[in-house]
Length: 423
Ligand code: HAM
Image (cartoon, rainbow, N blue to C red; front, side, top):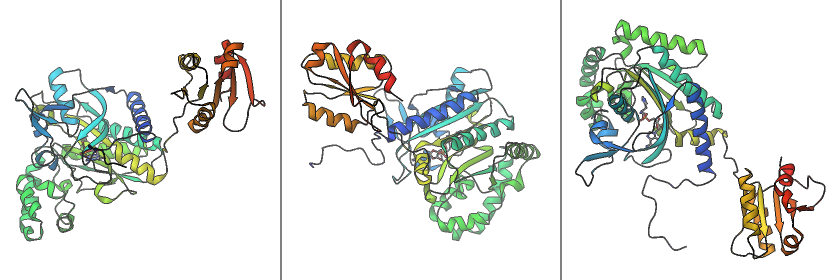
């Protein structure tokens, strides 16, 4: 095959059937769970003023290295969204809806990441955010929403890990203890970690490099430095998870890749994916983010799930398999008139999915196409049928349920007859 002039850019893919249909169904399940939990949908722009995302934290790779940013023709500094939380907080600050504001979303995020399986430069997320309440039960309800969604699509081989990063006031105390420890172990850290340590020592705990991870494993933990209020809030979340029968593991070194988190943080980790991209999703509280974006000092909490990775995990577990989106009826028409067009549109108008062949193919070629299409029924129209005001109806799959290979039916009874034959 001749190589075409253009291909998808690195880290992006064309998603075609049956995968595209599977993505659609996954989003439908998520939307259903979100609506059931009282969330309304939000659609934000795919690009924002770069400042919206810079507040996510300059110590995170997402902002420092992976942002798709550019100047538009009006000279504005713009960035493609690397995630949705900042956009949701920007929208809250802009519109000031009633609190608690519960909103869910779906769409693409963009990160100039190193492309590999499960890690793309354009990826799909579904997520939910609640702005305007400190109540830790909301943290639990959000985790429960994600949990129900994963269970409903059939995933089982994953672990929920949770942690508390404390309040803004707890951070300096912990950071001082952590920095002291990291300084003492500086020689064992990678060059990158030594740099990150200066901007945000917490992020060193998130490093995947083996040497750094060894240092992180023995580092002081946040839970020893939480304020009584943050401790009580975290205990309430854990008690909520226990009450709902949701299994979890407290992971004191879970920091997550974005800098805005306070108090509860969590991640869903798949056991069937490679360690470098085994996070199916995650989230937590971001009590200072709305204010950092120029809004009122309202707290927030939410999560996002990676659709691409979730489907890879589904592949590994053999669940949520792609469905074959085939049409129910195939119209075979060998006359020159518009009888085929008319029949196919009449079926579709009656809510029956229907396909047909084009370009005046022979009867044999059209029947072949009908069999290949996976349709249940073929409707055959030749000159004889047109003359007699009939159509021939034939079942294609699972033997012949009608007991009669092919039946001549009055053209006016087409929809009725097809309906009676469909399962
Ligand atoms: P995040 O952990 O950066 O959090 O992303 C959430 C999920 O999106 C990841 O666990 C992963 O499944 C998927 N994901 C992220 N980057 C990629 C990529 N390059 N390729 C494929 N999948 C990817 C957030 O985005 C936060 N906004 C979550 C949140 C909401 N926190 C509070 N509210």
